[in-house]
Figure 1 (cartoon, rainbow, N blue to C red):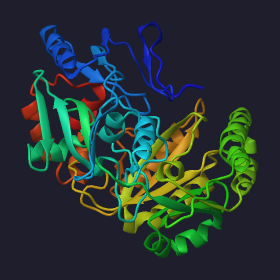
Figure 2: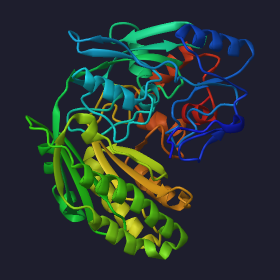
Figure 3: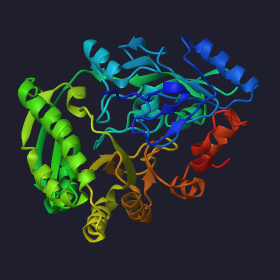
Figure 4: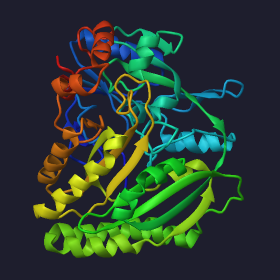
Length: 439
């Protein structure tokens, strides 16, 4: 099953199928110069412009009725600087390809999200993140970037060059221009030891501060309608490499986590009353395991079951209370939720519109199987998240607007000022950006 968006009959669809757009024209530039020319031509014709990666956002951040830019020919590594510990990569490169290429060179990103289907520019522009006590989102690992702005000119930025643009553009949601290349900090390839084990919900909450402090990367999944979680602890290891066995890896990652999970979600969608019983079985299906491997093989896993997702970032100190409220809401609501709730963390960073900007953060992600009504669940969850000054992930379902963001992001005005300077005519605007940033 393909995880890229479909472009059939002039209609663009995202991976989850909840967003569609009909662009007037599409372009797949083979060079930065071609992209600059396309942006200038669109301006002459009065068209808005959006770049789209693999469509893994659940929001309409990349949707346009004007010019749709597909960056897949702008792919590959431009330059590796081993002395500086950086790699410069074209913006349309899929994370999967970057991770494999870096490993071949004996290098790795420090941290990454849990899937690697997205392009590097799509993932960073929406604030894609994994989990980490000390290491932050993929965007926080950016050391420089190249941007085609509204007049077709090419701007390079870093902490030293155009620093105010750099602070904003690392997570720019496509509002400031089209990223054509990104320079990431990388480090010598290392090993991670993963320990995955079930743990009661109440025990995880009671010991959360210790679990967070004692592990470089801690996350857990809570199964609604149960008191059960699956926890995952990833820490650096001196080795030796002990990857997941081929058969057990297939059984747990493909058969249980994708194949059987898909089937039980079909049953749950057809007969919602069965979901609590299914959740109790699902939450006990995966047994404890430990393995040691290179980072991308530990951090990421295949996600073939399609879903819709909402994720909010709350202050880390508010996590336990927020989760207790979420569980109480589900328990008394009559809702039937077949997908686990994912919980991760990130340290504070200095990116203007990062969900972790200026504060230590915990992430709570709620999901529903594609084709299942999700509005009631997401609305009730969002009410809880926003009561704790939650910041929604820019690429996941939410209902917040510019007025709300101006309250929860102290540097929101700073971002808008950069946008006013780089794109005064709103060449890169669309309905989503009008809602989240104002006109």
